[in-house]
Every structure is written in structure tokens, then in C-alpha cells.
Length: 125
Image 1: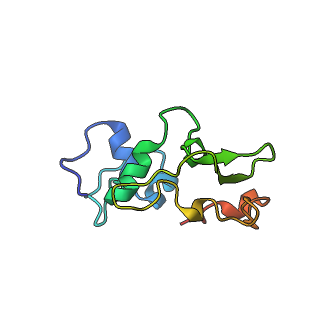
Image 2: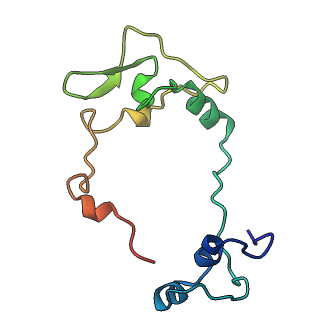
């Protein structure tokens, strides 16, 4: 997304500096607009099923698929389908909570990187 106009404030001038310019000098340098300006992060367009699933999540802090009807979370934090509640389906016929959301081995994720926080970080670009 190209800039609509040249930088006005000192901050705008600073954030448009290249990494080398920002590290090399403590002062703000006038320069032409970058060939590849940063992009405005925009979300991907959800399909209808995904949109309905997202809208079904309760509007509260920390809410996720575990708060949906038909999902039971045991004392040991294992997720399973609740047999006492009728399964909810979307208009397309797909279940509101997909099977893969509860298909971890014995209800738990075996992600080997869970214990290695440093392994999940993005590399420096």
C-alpha cells in the first residue's frame, strides 16, 4: 500500500527510514518514498462457514471453541463432545465444532514445541 503523501511529522519520517538509515544516524534524513513500502495488514476474507463459527464464539475475554454448545471440558482440561447436548450444525450441514477441533490424541495436543517457547518465535528478517 503506497503512502498517500510525504511524511509530515518527525515520527512519520523516522518510521519510513530503512533499517540501515535508522541505525546509522540519530537524525531524521529526507529520502524518497521506498520502492516497497510496508503493507497495511488486512485480514483474509472468511468463507461463510468460518464466519458463522467465528460469530458463534461468545464475546468474552479468553473465549474459544471450548465455550461452544456441545463441547465438554473435563477437569483434566481434556476436550470432548458432550453426549447430553445435541450437536449444532451450520446451514451448510457442517458441524459448528468440527471433529478435528476435538480429535487430538486423548483430547490433548501433542505439539512438541509447547515446552520450547523460543522455538515458536519468528526468525529475524
